[in-house]
Length: 182
Image 1 (tube, rainbow, N blue to C red):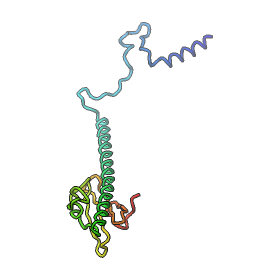
Image 2: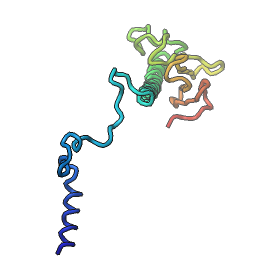
Image 3: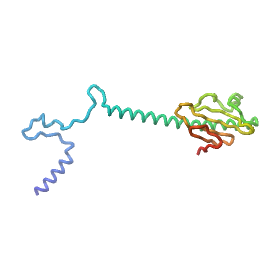
Image 4: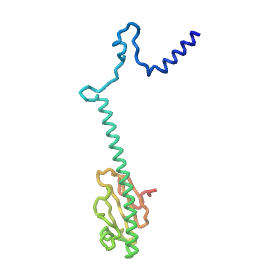
């Protein structure tokens, strides 16, 4: 019977220990018995963090910045592909009306009604766009989308022609032989 009582008491203490207050031993000083045995590491009282905490905080900040840059680059790349599709649509409409593809953005943006709206001769959504008419192929056009130099979308170039197939290349301008976007 005594053995069963010891096992039950030990189990109860193990379960309840986190919830129990520290009770002083018989005849012990109350102040001494309630003091915790180990102190967790805390930042200095003057508000400065330890070197390890500062390093960890700097790493987290850098991770957040990198994640933001990656998301921004991806967003810019998606917008570039969307812009190329818009340009192809404007070129198809121009070709249907005039019988030829436009050789520059002015031919698409200035007529009334315009085939394309906005200023496309500047950086748009992190990319610079350029229309070229390939020599010897009057029924074709090339549009190149180049990332803004030093911008977050750096390194991914896009290309589209009259076929409407968008192609890409990393770190160099894309062309008709570049991989197709899937």
